[in-house]
Length: 247
Image 1 (cartoon, helix red, strand yellow):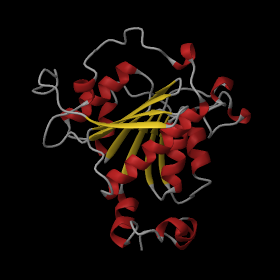
Image 2 (image 1 turned 90 degrees about the vertical axis):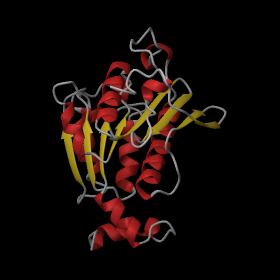
Image 3 (image 1 turned 120 degrees about the vertical axis):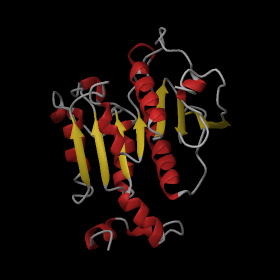
């Protein structure tokens, strides 16, 4: 038995779906997911991964909760202000499934500790930090790890899964700039709470699709506008001039 009787009861409405046969339930149970960033995207993402039966989740975030986070970071409340996001998120997620195995790191990913990502089947980056995204992308390319980049600003969302296997296509192929050249940030141009939530939900679905091989999400850049509800899926190709291609 891959799940306890309690878990089968919690996830019963999902597990009767056609895609959730015994083989796929086993895949879901064993998948190891690491989420970097527990902000507006990471909160609904982690909540819906746990609510969908994912059991092995690692959380990375070195920030503490502020009042300005509460409008879109749905795992936290006023009682959590000042606490580490990763610890508060873990405690909240375990209330959905107490049998879930969650490891929480109250630190940011750096060159010194990035090797801890090696154990993940899929690494999901919702960090809202361009330099960190480039660092994670490079690590995933060199170690053939699946990497999902997910970002949201204003009412606009960008999400893409890079398999980093067989043929080379990576975040650097699409966005080759190394420097964060005055890119707009949430604290300067704003972000819709709903936009962040939609980004988290779609990223969760892409993650489950990748685990169960429901849909080919590889190298598909999803561009979503949460205000007019438009979605454009663009199949991206590798960049022959990508600095990481032959690194």
